[in-house]
Image 1 (cartoon, rainbow, N blue to C red):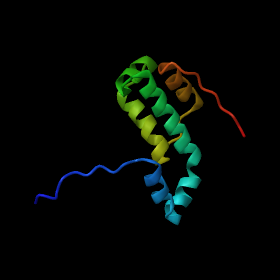
Image 2 (image 1 turned 180 degrees about the horizontal axis):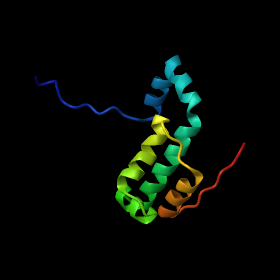
Image 3 (image 1 turned 135 degrees about the vertical axis):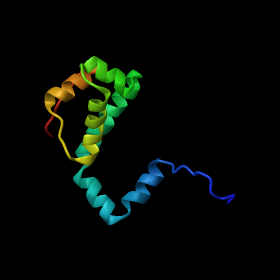
Image 4 (image 1 turned 30 degrees about the vertical axis):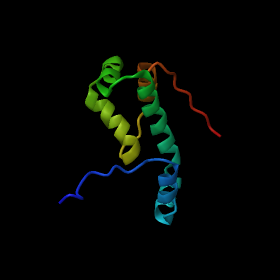
Length: 102
């Protein structure tokens, strides 16, 4: 089948708007917006530092699987990382943790 090639989905503003036009997706997104923002922050910090999960884990004194669980836990909602864990992660990627209530 010649048309069975992988077609990546662009994750741009238009795609985001398309997804959020679905009321169920929008409701879920709105309910979890803080979690998504935190995940975006930690993933961006790791990318900015140019580190792999294994390198972050080494700097935190843990295993790569623990860092993978930390990053995925924010999406799954199965576990909320402690402030201390987030502080260690931040230090490992050359950042500091700040928490603000608004």
